[in-house]
Length: 421
Image (cartoon, rainbow, N blue to C red; front, side, top):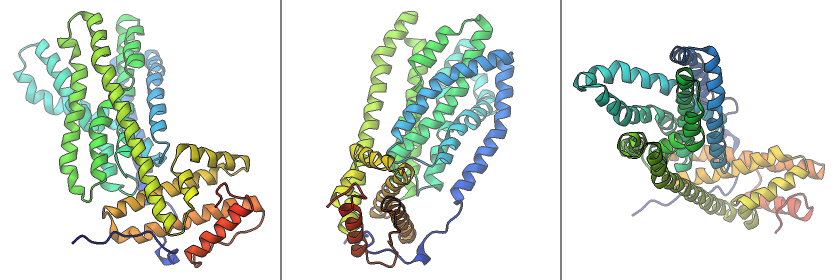
């Protein structure tokens, strides 16, 4: 006989269960991690400077590498719009990929794999094949996936599902690709004086390749595991996602060894294999985003039945068009920031409810829910007080149905709120 599912709060919870104000442990840990990575970046700069040999070429290649990085960041932010991740966590993931993952990849290759595998490689051609098709995909994808694993294990309150996994994995991969592009662009400029072809190949044709490899494999696998009841799923999802990421990476890297026809054959391979893979990845992300919308709508309707939202408000909060209408209403009244926070809090509340339904973190569910509902009322009070010009009392001790009735009367009848009965 299955245990009964928890229901949404029927009334605000007394203040002792509210979470403490102030910097969270995750915020402090993220800032410490960013500072550590910033210090480690000097090692990456020294490595790149030694490989390229010219500070001027290093600077030029860095500017060139900003082009594909900007495109990937734009794509990630577009994916992340529905439920934005903490900016500190996003910065940490990107910096990890561009700094720590690069340094750990170099250390693993030079200090571990080369002494073990090198003696068994008969010539330079065998080494090139091994380094390109086996070593690079396996090692790079391993270290690029670490930020996703950290979020899965330590920050499950904000790591809700596959979209979050895709976002953190893509950011880590974007950072790694940025550093790698600087290396490729700079060494090519130093050797030939012309970086146009390598820039077209890596910066224009394939800016998303690294992001797709890591996101579709490790990011998606750990994101799906985050929807499960037990963290033990990581023991299966982690290695499986890593193998998928490494396989996609190896497929791309190996093209130069088995695709005939030189540059023309490579471009044909790109159109026949890589373009469809990119399209499939985009379709997968779109489906995941649609699933997020459905979860938000379903879980907010749970709270709507308990009196926290009207039906129309749930529909507005759970659709892109509805959110745009809410933001347009708020923008005209100078309330863009609190409305944005209100929408984000409602989305977090829906995800919290989803976590409760699968039985995760039951012991702290009540306190988390109380904090989110209190924040929701705070945003409402602030916006309505600003619009109608007088304070609105939405106290925690008021029964939820009375709060909902007061909200509908104040917000609907006085045209102070874009939701009507």
